[in-house]
Image 1 (cartoon, each protein chain N blue to C red):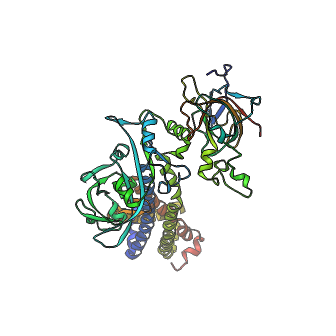
Image 2 (image 1 turned 180 degrees about the vertical axis):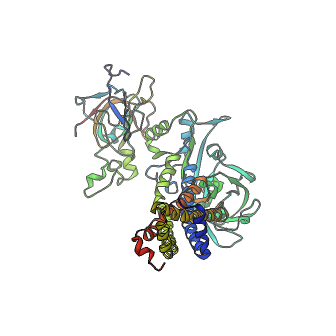
Image 3 (image 1 turned 90 degrees about the vertical axis):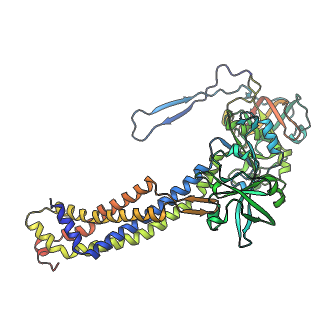
Length: 383
Length: 174
């Protein structure tokens, strides 16, 4: 085996070339980490948004989107009095009638932004138990509660949606009563308001859905209710299944992030390979000399792999610091909400594995180019 | 409710055979088939569903139609299905050149027709509630199966939400 110091000394021969190799592999690793963070973030927020205990009752035929759903106003009352096995607190059943609507809002009379607004009653807090008021207090008629990431979704400065400030929704001025959090869910990008305010504002006569939380009952009991009350024209979906469908809908977009990352990474990878070819090619005669004095081809290849792995892992380290500094904690918006990018252990592992793979595999083609020529001709080569 | 005492066992054989695993386990699911399923055609002239909706709770009734009218006509784990009147509703595949993957939901028919032309059929257990067994697949019952049901109008039925407690169900061979 060649001493480890030989690989280190060779790396330091040309600092500019080393920098190229480190930056090239760093870029590849960063791209992979970004793609992994986006995928994890989007999948995470969609899966966390749907509770196994919640069932959404929405219009038959509108199971794909609550926004398209319309159900009768009387449904909530009928559900509350007809279905047993729902969660109950102090005699109040966890039945939340809701209106979901995309609606234009404006802050300080500036640009109109389209926001996801949910009209709710206080029972919404019994159903969506992950929601808690972080600042200010719960809403009253004439007021709104904003999710802690709503500013990001609307492309506003963070201080634009603070308790006490006013926003215009359609033609009405509403006061922000508080900010709520619902960790890891799409609700954090929403604006909540009193269901009656939204109903009169949007001139709707129907609810979008009724969300119930199961106690000792089962989903089948809710589904059974929808079949026994065909007149209400309802469909029942577990909230987790609803968001699983949305996650499946976004699968091609997540795939596109991988494809984009892959294309950029391929360019960087080819650049990195080129750098390694350029680094190894002038050393054909030196490598032949090492063979002539008794070092085997495997030992020399191992040393070349050590060189490229050290460079690639240095790049991976650099990319990891860049990801933590630039990526971690950034809110990314997509059509139904926002999510926070996190450099989680799985994202870090994806970067590390990529860096290791680049180092281990990247040295093989240029290494073989140096090692395969016959020894006599290699010794006479110009390199 | 009586059950077929010989116990209709439907052998739901699940082969959980992982690739390369030597000891593949075999699980046999035991499902009780309610004795309301009959092999002989049911006597009596069926009443058209829109007409039958006028019947009162407790009235005896015979209905015929197709399993259709909603996207999911069966309830998983409960003895309930939705029967649609094929004189009122038309499954999408009957319209020709229609490639609807769920033709039984009669999605081309207006909501009013669907409401008038559908009925909830339930098989009750001894506790008076729908049995905790799904009916899909039992005796070949599936979406768009032609079914004749004999039973009584349920206590909780109304002209708007018409429910029949089945005493006999005959599934015609396709």
